[in-house]
Length: 386
Ligand code: ADP
Ligand code: MG
Image 1: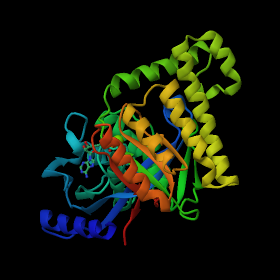
Image 2 (image 1 turned 180 degrees about the horizontal axis):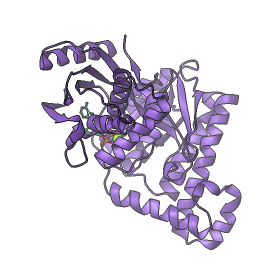
Image 3 (image 1 turned 135 degrees about the vertical axis):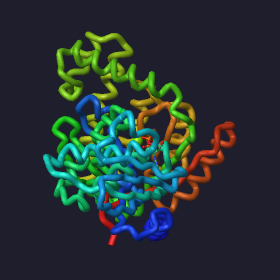
Image 4 (image 1 turned 180 degrees about the vertical axis):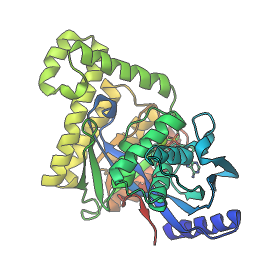
């Protein structure tokens, strides 16, 4: 698939623009292994880059014009570099144009050339695998090379976030871009959302004969916007009632005091965040000391906490998790913001087909939409393709 797409993107570029691209760059999507709704509380997250990628074929121009196109949508969007703004960049092109804009903020006084860009991707859109970060990071590494900016992967992650915040207009954190840029084969990216320090941690899935199954429930994120805002508000209210700047400063030892001070709902929101941060740290420690078979219970505790305390799961996600566990998964949980989207299940390779079949059958039995079930592995981060 990877080589197919790499060739397809170069051919697609040439068919569209009438000449060959200089090079092809790629960046992966990501899945969050554990650490949900902890990012905006300055806590810990632990995603990994997956073996699904966006490929970007790019060539510099001699003028300051930018043209972008994608196999995903018809037409070519054309704009002067200096004209890119939240108002002029709309639809999918806001992602690549936003990255160009964010990089331009770093080119002090200097001028850079425009470019032609064409992308192809096999990261599913809207499944919680961050197809958006895959675009941003493929374009960021491409322009960093072509414009000879010399920015580090960490700086490029900030560039992707800036593009998404300022030009796309989505108030997202830095997790997705960090995973897409810093990923490493069979490793996860442990990220501290307060210091922004990232550490690459050996997952050992391949070595231990494990694979991660994604179960995309196809349930649209119902009430996601309102639900997300109210969870954020509860976390802020909880932190301030406890006299803390953010819930990152709260630990397990603060929970009895929180139970006394806070109303029941706010307390349970706080308890999710505090225990989830702890679970991320325990997951990293378990991987280091005992290997991936030791993280199953942590994954399931995370799911229970999101279901019961944070109340962001839905029946389809609970069914996916319980069915996978019943048929031999080591651990499983919903992943992403909640109210729909995907669940993940860590499975022994020999159980993958039984678990996939059982989940699909259970969904049919309950009259749910047919889920999309597929395996991902932890892949290297964004790079220039040879
Ligand atoms: P995700 O969880 O997949 O990142 P988002 O809503 O953040 O979901 O981003 C999805 C958006 O990214 C799409 O609506 C589209 O604008 C853009 N996108 C994703 N993949 C492609 C692609 N291959 N080509 C063009 N745009 C894409
Ligand atoms: Mg996204």
